[in-house]
Length: 230
Image (cartoon, rainbow, N blue to C red):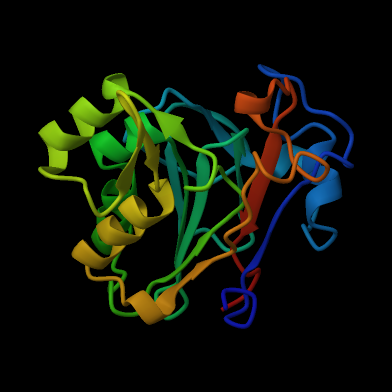
């Protein structure tokens, strides 16, 4: 969907050269992920991810500070986030044009990182009815078992979460972070028809992806690049 709108985006697999935890996400993985990224990998903008809802604006490459949402309106600007079960979410308004890339785990979901990404694009002149969204490889409801440490903050933030969390065993639930963030997109005005979820579970597919819950120390990199001309 986003590719058809002229946006280059991709997520690496474990077959790319390994990115250990804490390493620069634009080192080797960024060169591998999108062959169409123009220029060198030093142009990729990234942030120090803190499992929050902070937003930084990118007009050039390198580390931009601590945040989990990066936005840009700069032509040709590539953005990157690193994940290992958390959701990488790409948001793009092709008419503005404006791009956001978010790293969203359960803490980011509680803090409204997805909503913050949409609001940041709106502040840049995007229209939520035009925004296209893609949710990349991440842990799915098939594998994401959580306890009250996760459920209680979700309930405090959103009220009953029965639509996202299915009781699994005593004090345990299977949590659907995909659905929780799709709900945030819908509440922010993004049409459900404009949301593409790859539904690729990192925990199920350890032959393809790194998964923190399955003991992998590697990281996936999701990149998205603004078109060079518009």
